[in-house]
Length: 113
Length: 110
Image 1 (cartoon, each protein chain N blue to C red):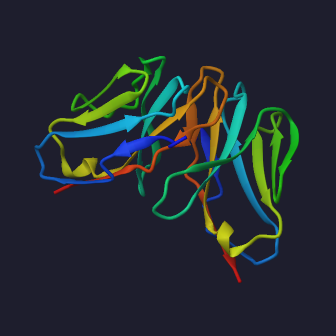
Image 2: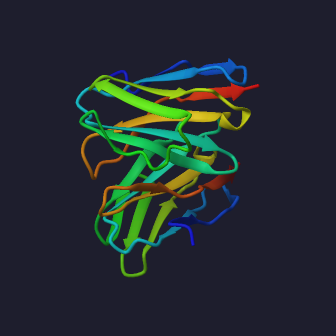
């Protein structure tokens, strides 16, 4: 099992550019989560999907953020346009149905300059 | 009041000692509780889960849950320098929402 796979590992982009983060969950896991981690705010849940359907997107900070899960093996988180305050580590995690714990990917470190 | 609160730390213990990490939560209906370990620059890793009152032991780790007091703890016996990390408490509510605490940074000194 390769675990949760995220790409890219690092992304540096200029303010105003579009950024797309990618995630492949563990096969057989039907819940997928996108988190953002910063020193100031800790680990924040942005959105989670169950069986490819968005269940709770209340953590998405604003309309500049969008997420999709077109199938059980792939999800994207898009920021358009990006801003310096979006700089953070973005984690994708997956799990079997509640109440199991999560397996996190290695994260994408995003820097917006 | 935060939904999940942890001792801010940092916590420092000598090698071989017991490290005690604490967590309280506000949603009385919460049913699932987890401890994650996060090394600097790495992603969180699940180390313990607990669902019912009492103790759950796994090697040097013991998770304790008291739902009446809305309290979860993690004990690490015979602490090793390799245990130095940030420990995150996570709680899943009845509604399925998962909330993480801010974490407690543990340093084990040789």
